[in-house]
Length: 216
Ligand code: AP5
Image (cartoon, rainbow, N blue to C red; front, side, top):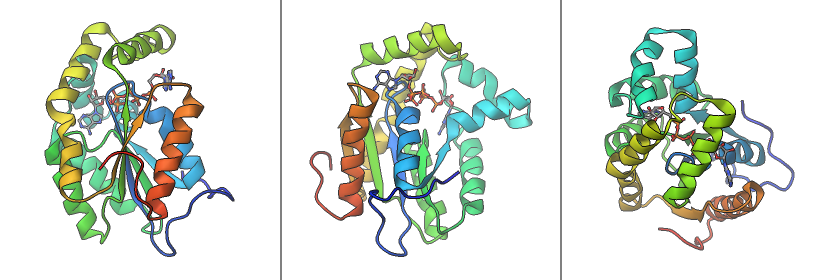
């Protein structure tokens, strides 16, 4: 999964492999930007949404439990998602840098992640939070619905996903600010490459130990 570091990519300090989070509301471009971050910084991309969609497609027990919840735009239970992430992190080579996408999504998940990482002698090194106005998010997701037909891209499920984000997920950023993890808020409006330029600059700043342009 992890790509080799590009020649001009910023590297983590020698021997230090990082854990980063790509964060933001539904449709903000987390998955799109994660693919680019993965290539640029040689991080393993771990998306809980993709993992769950694959479980649903395979008809596994987890998939059967998650399918209806996801289609309605609700969050699957914390303990189920925590178990999935913990087992993947335990299997991840400790020399890998990891980019989490879609997790944690509640303060409880964030605290569970802190405990999992402490057991592995690791911690969250940075959070990149994409900021996009809600009407634009809805437009992007309705457009994707027409092209890809994702089951949770109906107008009703999109509204529920936005509601869950505001109610339970947005507070995760304050959790990380409180415990001193660098949080970079990045304008997610513009062409994908333009947004990536901003994201890359913020991650480089963190990896090189420079102060951030925005956020914290
Ligand atoms: P998940 O898959 O994480 O969905 P999401 O957060 O709703 O995010 P999306 O995948 O819709 O959007 P994105 O921000 O990744 O943007 P993308 O790059 O795709 O989770 C799905 C569900 O799984 C949840 O609702 C929940 O039920 C469950 N789940 C997952 N994790 C969970 C957890 N931890 N706890 C509990 N439940 C969990 O882009 C969106 C669209 O916009 C695309 O069409 C893209 O091409 C386009 N786009 C991207 N960037 C731009 C740009 N700059 N300009 C124009 N268009 C753009």
